[in-house]
Length: 119
Image (tube, rainbow, N blue to C red; front, top):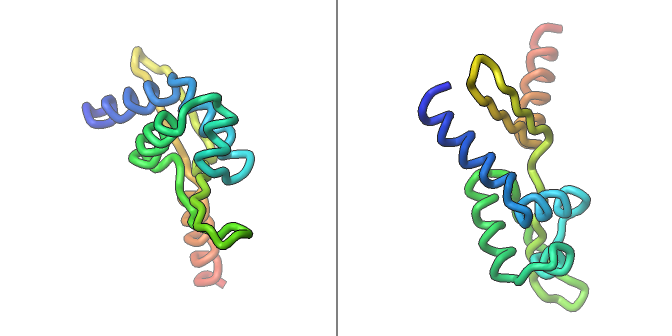
């Protein structure tokens, strides 16, 4: 593991160690949620939720969807992008890998295109 990978893994582990970040990721995985819904669900202030969302977005672990509510108001819904998270310890080194839903879709598209080309 290179120094860059070590610092990325350390940053991700620190992020997953944070209670609010984990709660946001789990709640946003069940269904896309507004910051207000996440605030109630996590029992945290909106400022705390927005700070954690910002950090999660920096690491591509959460994405935002804009929508219009029933009253015509604009809403932002937050959704987890994580499909799998793996932590491994081998030969005294910690390895962390995160696969996002976007990566899975890209992998499927590549597989499908390769399949079609070889028919």
